[in-house]
Image (tube, helix red, strand yellow):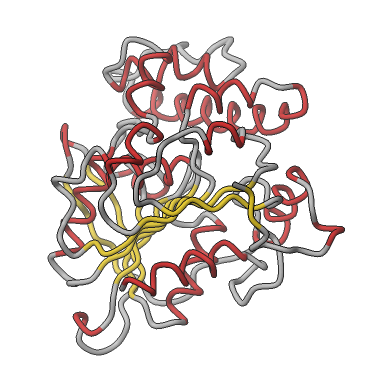
Amino acid sequence: MINGLFRPHPWLSGGHRQTLLAHLLRRRLRWSPPSEDVVVDSDGGARLLLRASWQPGPREDRPALVIVHGLGGSDTSSYVVSTGARAFARGWHVVRMNMRGSGDGEALCPLLYNAGLDGDLLATLECVAARVPRIAVAGFSLGANLTLLAAGRGRDRLPEGVRALVGISAPLDLSACADALERWDNRLYQRYFMVMLTEAYRRRHRKRPDLFPAGLEAGLSTVREYDDAITAPFGGYEGAADYYARSSAGPWLEAIERPTLVLAAADDPMIPVAAVEKWPIGTVTREVTRTGGHCGFVGRSPAPGWFWAAERGLGFLEEHC
């Protein structure tokens, strides 16, 4: 059901407008609090880089927020920085996770991440739980899918200290989202992702030609084609269809036992609203706003870059942490 929680100025409404405005308003955001690099070992020899910013005083006095970026992102992504900065200002410890091979974590691990690697997030949460007794998670886009998958499929491994989770602009049905990207009006986003993905693969080939053969990315023009040729084989899937079916978080929402918020926009150009609303949710809170775009939610907010979703997500998490 679409709600009216988010009410930006009428001139700011619209899926593409919200998505692109978010990029323009937040692209210069940089992380300023001191941070500590933490390395986490995960499944299959993967090593993950976390950037942890601790509040002064005993760590157990405050909760930690683990933030998970989306496709092509890292700990420096603008939505990560905005949410983390607002959380830090409100007294949270902030841990910005890099998925395997992302950001500066590429130097630690050349492996490719994908939407189904909930074990990486669970390993991260176990690491943070050893330092802080109360934890919340905020995931964005592909990282939101990972967050919800870990909460549902990985619920038996979820540390006790994880009190609540938020998934913002989550591609709950990966196949439907890949189809949406192929619409003519989404060609800008498709192009952006393909430039980023193909360059990331070429970079890995240059560093580790023994692991990544040359030319696999040649001629690919869509995210689905990339997932079929590269993501799926390197992730242990039979193809893109198998990868999407096994890695989509939607079917696992009903299994989630911790307080969880799924926040989406009805005009998200990359995520059809039907792909958000079709799943049984059990105890999960699902909020769909009329506008907001993809990780946009540009409206008056104390979060840097007018990021209303950051404030809404933190409000939900603070109710439980």
